[in-house]
Length: 71
Image (cartoon, rainbow, N blue to C red):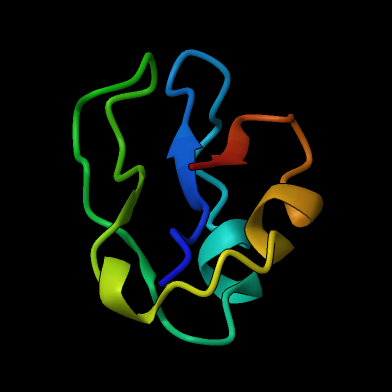
């Protein structure tokens, strides 16, 4: 079975906009990592990795390049 690629989040770049969460058609990303970044807001996290297909929509939609999908 092939390993699926998963998003990783760079919280130093992330502006906590939530676009990645809305871009995910599978509901894999939630805004739950409160206080990890410079703005001390809720930041994205892969809360349901089993539903992530590695489609890269979150990475493509991120306006600041804070998401990288990799194995």
